[in-house]
Structures are given as structure tokens and as C-alpha cells.
Amino acid sequence: MVRIDIRYEGELRCTARHAPSGTTLFTDAPADNHGKAASFSPTDLLATSLGTCILTTMGIVAQRHGIDLVGASASVEKEMATSPVRRVGALTVAIHVPRDPGPEQRKLLENAAATCPVHASLHADVRHPVTFRWGA
Image (cartoon, rainbow, N blue to C red; front, side, top):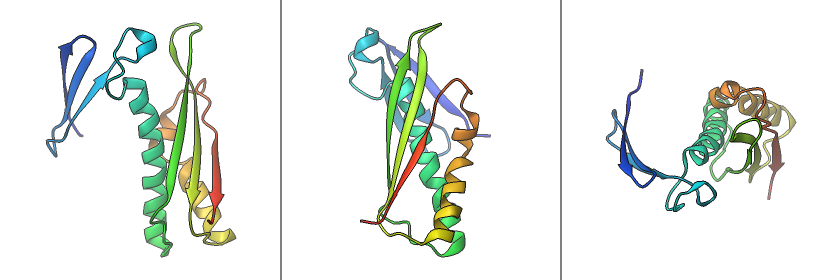
């Protein structure tokens, strides 16, 4: 179990503190939903969670199999939906791995990406396609 302590600061801004490390981050409502967009919105953090979870899960598999994943990156595009309620409609992920590890290792890493805990936790109504670009 991990505890995150969150405090509403007013003006649609929150402070979140990760209890185990003491690390703090701030959220702000997005500009299209009455906020100042001065920081990540809560739904931006969902997009961030998906991208970092995919890379982290791929990293675990890469370590296990001696694959160099340093420099790999993810880009996540978040699209909001408004019907039937305002929610995340799609999280489109593009993964770039600068060194192509070959077909067998690509399959291992792609499977890892598909099984990251955040990916597995998303509601079925949230589209979340993942594409890969291998090599420079």
C-alpha cells in the first residue's frame, strides 16, 4: 500500500505528497475547464501514468533480458470526451526505442507494454492504442 496525501489549495489547485518519498507535485484544472493550466491536470496525470508505466514495465523486462532501453521515450496524446460525461476518451501512446533490439526482444517489450498495470486498469471505453518506432 502507498499513501498519497492531497490538499485542495483553492482556485482549482491541489498539492499531492507521495508519503514514502516526500515528493510533492501540484495539479491545476485545465484552461478548458475553468482552470489556469499552470500545472498537470488530474487527467494529464492519468496520461503521464500510462506513458511512464509502459516505459517502466518495458524497463523491467529489458533488465531481465539484457536489453538496452536507455533513451527510450513515450509520447501520450490525451483526448477528452464530453458525452455522456466529461472524461478521458483516448490516450494515444507512441513509444520510440532508439536501438532496435531485434524481433524476439521487440515482441517481449511490446508484450510488456500491453501488460503494464495502468494499461490494464483503464476502463474499456478509454481508447488507448500503442505504437512503436524501433531504431534511429
